Length: 323
Ligand code: PBG
Image (tube, rainbow, N blue to C red; front, side):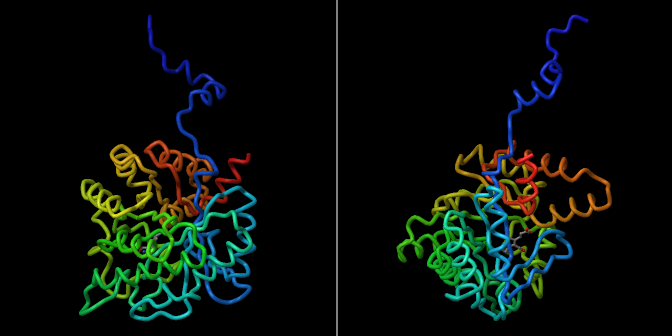
């Protein structure tokens, strides 16, 4: 055989493979999601998410030490309130759980980049991401509450806000309210392409945010739709979004790719709870090699065009990267 092209030449050993490697997961790419609750000395493991906890604020600060020591640049905060009501008051209360967590995180670790999830579903007794009338999730009356939530997070010291509710017009409402309150420099990382996904199941256990009736399909996107994701993203960018989240990550690599190609702005892949649980369950059975699978999944997000990755695996990944 006189083969001119032999691609195997560049795969001959680890030295040359690493020299021609096109994509890398770096610790600076990682955003670690964390759950905070009221109380003291409490650290509840989420049964479906081994290694992920709901932390009371004292133990949250302890846990942050590890995050910072590992060099992870940013966290994404979710709160579990003491009480819930129809309008999600806990979401925008000055001393809500997330607001207090932001204060304590910035006090102990001023350099840690603190991002907050902006949504009502953890705080409403019906578990939906907006206010309700006659069984319908209302769009416009929800916007003001989301904007108040974002401003209260910024007032507590949040570096960035991430609206995940999927109401129409919420990026504009949040941007305007932040600017009016003097937070012109706080970026909005929008969950622009957020699908109505079965992969969020374990999160709802972690955040206690399962809808009490119906589902989220009237506001989150229909999984078969790619063009609609481009339209949602275009609208959010027009409204002032600084970064775009694609969520979930694994089954939606095409959306990440298209978003990066088309819009060019920073794209963030959210490696969601169900993706984490599947890996944990299979590796606990000894059916897969956890480290190998996680690194392969995360680098696929980078290959698709993600600049940043939100992942519950972040601590493990940071440890593995340290060697
Ligand atoms: C809140 C929110 C959810 C997630 C992030 N923000 C749940 C949902 O929309 O049902 C899911 C995160 C995950 O599954 O890891 N709206």
